[in-house]
Length: 233
Image (cartoon, rainbow, N blue to C red; front, side):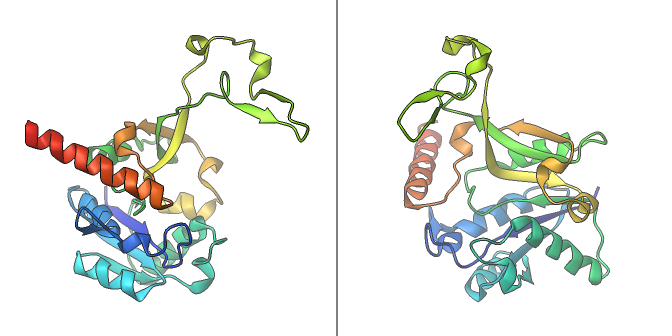
């Protein structure tokens, strides 16, 4: 199957300005996604969709092609799904066709190539989209509550009768490690969960999602720890 890897990186991040090209371990955040994509034999092309020239420069430096993202699709409230559709239509207008659309957000820099490959392997004929998840630290069946204006609170899934953490079913957080789907599904639908979704579990140490400076510092710490472990080994 022909796979095109996409990285959608706009220039106007408010949580952490300039985060998509901020160096992490000496490498721009964006470049880490490009490098992982280039490790996968099935990935025929790596494409960065951006509205910012400084991001485009880094993308080309690390071997990716660039699609100019319209300003209307690059604001704080813009849907990334629409940016997905724009990228696919742009390539189809050029006469380029591919079988698998793979999104590798720049904000998940600690992913391993095997995590992404597991997503590609999971995209079978009965699945429209593969997402990645990681074990959640909180559970709506046990220790997550809904709080009313007067302060009264109750467990989110209170009607289940579960009173012990051990009896609560495992819950997972969606991560931004990877999304694998097909171009036709993206063009014909409005969101991931419009289709048949399958998930791949990624360990928490590789599922850090950078939104602000605290997430970035966590990624730096995890990267340092991984380097120390390799050195000791």
